[in-house]
Image (cartoon, rainbow, N blue to C red):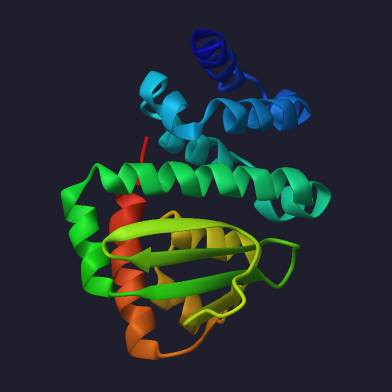
Length: 188
């Protein structure tokens, strides 16, 4: 099954955005069933390539039209990102400096909701909100994705009122610095 799924994933990266959208739910289900970690052994650049495709779409529209698929994609992406972090001592150190923190992410213009946790130099995350988080970041979907991917400076997004942060500002600055390090792992 591993080689078959690797081939399917490789072919999916070649599809047009419309074709990919039609095939995304079964593809994501296959990835989840097989296991993100196992697939990343076969396709080491899986996460940067997924992020590359994410940069090509209108995330706000896609999330509005496909909330279930968007949530599954987010879960797989966060799992993959956490695996990339595990393999990078510099990023783990940056996360260690950020301390223990949980963050909720909520879009103002789409149903996108997610979270991430930093603990012991590790990063985990997924769709949905945590019951209790140290920080809450709300903003416009595209701006939040750009900040998370390192394509937009978080301070600029904050001052342009594209995102707003509820919680301890010095903690938010430490998290922002650590997540900028994480975003470097997402470059294809």
